[in-house]
Image 1: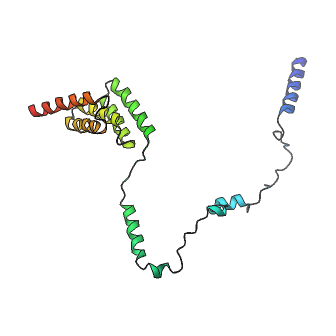
Image 2: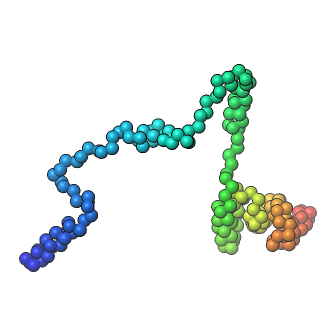
Image 3: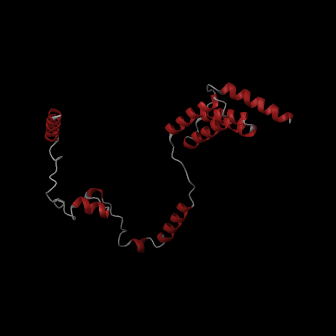
Length: 185
């Protein structure tokens, strides 16, 4: 038992000496106050959100005689602000996200989950509106889910984008099939 106790004490002694500098703390010593003063340049710059670099500061104040030279400029600013508030929501052009949405849509399409695939192809067209493959695949899903008019629209969009594309013959056949089916009804 004494041998085990000696080995444990030795191991604990070795562990305490293997710690990196600064890792051991003296439990009895009071903690020292922060060495960084509260009014340091990095703190004040963050608090006021002003760049510490004078090169990046841009003077946005109008010239002294601006009101005299441009008396109607106030109305133009108000019109511009109103026009901005009327802006519609938009999504950024992101071809990588569109490609991923097409990939996931293909996964669902192969599993015959056409509604899920349809939504992913729509998402792809949100991030890349003129994507030919997404238009073609969306048209196929629209046809499978019973929306022939939407299918025609997207087949035509594909043919407009890639008239000689790899799916052009399939799109032409689908358009003929949908048009003849529409005439019979």
